[in-house]
Image (cartoon, rainbow, N blue to C red; front, side, top):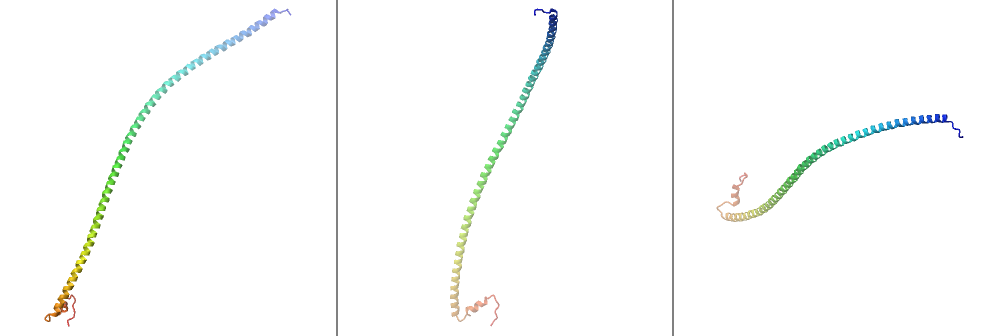
Length: 180
């Protein structure tokens, strides 16, 4: 063992150095590529951050504009609702007023009808009373005339100078009777 072959060992070490230098070179190249990739990623991240910031600004602007439009629309709707509520309230008052007027007119009409019914009943009663009174008067008149005719008849029949009452009444007859 102690026989070391230095030239081989040197050659072996030189090759090992070459391999290690090659590996270092590859590692350096890899580090450079990684640093470049890292720098590219940092640039990309910075660009994305700027894009996000720009988008956030645009978003705030859009949100502000949308909020303004929403407030305007809300105010417009509230005004429209208020106008419509006033119209509904006014219409309800008009309906209530018309309903009261209809009720008042109905009550007046019912009272007029009641008064007219009472007047009709009163006049009917008066007419009935007058008809009975007239019938009584006619009967009295008939009775008196019958008595007078009988008295007159009796007095005519007693007077020999005058024709009997029946003959005298024939003179007033409306029919043409044959003469005896």
